[in-house]
Structures are given as structure tokens and as C-alpha cells.
Length: 284
Ligand code: C2E
Ligand code: CA
Ligand code: CA
Ligand code: CA
Image: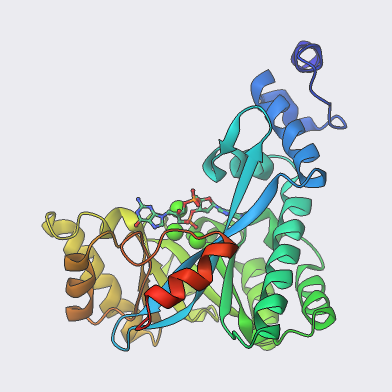
């Protein structure tokens, strides 16, 4: 680890305070994490917003906030590259605080314009293990004068199964305050149906890996169909992600899927592109 730190320093990157997780990280990853640390303060992060629509009524239900990092030398770094890095260190805490704050700022701006939508934010395992997460979200939303019902939190099955008892407590706390929750990437983890039944979640999000090929892969379609039935039988809504064409959207409608998200409906949009998207997609 010493030589790794030395190496990262030699390359001219600022160094984070020593963290035990560095032991298992390559110099490149340490350098990237260090850059991310700086990137937060230097305004290199932003949110983009991907629309979620109701399939039957063809109306907009809200957006999902997705994090983007414009690195000064590397350009656009994908969240799949830096979120796991932040998750493996404590940096996911300040990163998530940044995301929530940016999301609330955006929601406030929208509501001031009379645009009342819900915004979904992704949470990581560690966030749920944070004492005070619920309090800080509630406090923050109150400061922005936002009703808790305009926030939705997306949690993966991995998050839930990391410590089902604790997670259930946290989710109950959020639910009691009126915050909505959904289970992301459903079908890729190993969630026990017992917890699914107990948790105060309102929506299952079918993972895009099942949706993207569901027209050509019979097994994928079976999985999507079964998930929709399971969710409905448990009183939950279903959203399919990864909807890339009209045929898939139509099929999902036939299968009674409630909502859809994906490139066919809308790519993740810059804030400035949202009004244009809304004008072009009147029926959503
Ligand atoms: P996710 O939550 O499953 O987000 C969906 C990802 O699929 C996004 O990638 C989105 O751009 C992409 N996508 C949307 N529609 C389609 C489609 O029709 N086809 C295909 N092939 N892909 C589609 P993105 O933005 O690169 O995010 C990747 C992952 O990074 C997210 O997966 C989420 O797990 C994580 N992430 C993003 N932002 C945050 C954040 O603020 N906090 C945390 N903890 N994780 C985040
Ligand atoms: Ca998500
Ligand atoms: Ca997902
Ligand atoms: Ca995913």
C-alpha cells in the first residue's frame, strides 16, 4: 500500500487521508478516488435525469437522477467505474450527500416552476448503514420545503440482503415519513421473497438485462412476465428498465407492466434538455 500511495503521489494526484480499503486498491484506483474527492469541490459532478413513464396512460411519472462525472483529463467517467470505488471506501457518504442535495435543489427549482414530479435517487449499501440517514434526508427536504412524497429511493437487492433486519428498520423509518422506495435491478440478486413481502417498498424494477432481449429470448420474457405477476400479487407496481424500442414497450403493456424507462422513451437528459423533451413528448 505504501508504494501504491507513493506511486499515486508521484503521478501528481492529491492523496486522500489514509484509508484501510486502500490496501486492496490499485494505484490507478486510488488516484481516481482521489480525483473524485477533488471533483466534488471543483464542480465536476452533475446529475442527469431519465424519464419514467406510465405505460397505460402514457404520462410522465417522474425521473431517475443519474450521476455524471466530467473528469478534467479523462473526460466523462461512467458511474459504473467510480461508484463501486466510492462504495469500497467511506467516500460514498459525502458522494451520496452531494447527490441528495443536488436532487433536492433540482426538485425545488422544478416545483418553483410548477413542475411537480418525483425524482428517484440511487442508494448504496453503505448509505443504509449510516446512522442518521433518515433524519438527514427528512431535515434536508424540510429545509428545501419539499414534501417527502416527491422523493423515491432505489435500492438493489444486494443492499437489502446485506443486513435485512437493519435495512427493514431504516426503510420503515423512511416509509413512515412518506418517502417512496423501489427495488432496483430486480432479478439479479438473491432477495428472499419473505423480505420482499415485509419491506415497505412500492415498486419492483425489472433489471434491464431481462428486458432488453425479451422479444427474442423466451426465457427473458418468462422472467419479465413472472416478475410482473409476482409484484402485482404482492400489491407492488412494476417498472421495466432498458426499454429500447416500441415493440418492447407494446409487449410490456400487454403483460400489464405499469411503468417503463429506457432509451426508447428517453435517454438520461441534461437539465437543460428536459423542457424540450417534454414538448416533443406531449403524451408522456
Ligand atoms: P441503474 O440504477 O440500474 O441505472 C440504469 C442505467 O442504465 C443507467 O446507466 C442508464 O443510463 C442505463 N440505461 C437507461 N436506459 C437504458 C436502455 O434503454 N438501455 C441500456 N442498455 N441502458 C440504459 P448509468 O447512468 O451509467 O448508471 C449506471 C449505474 O450507476 C446505475 O445503474 C446505478 O447503479 C449507478 N448510479 C448512477 N448514479 C448513481 C448515484 O447517484 N448513486 C449511486 N449509489 N449509484 C448510482
Ligand atoms: Ca437505479
Ligand atoms: Ca437498474
Ligand atoms: Ca444497474
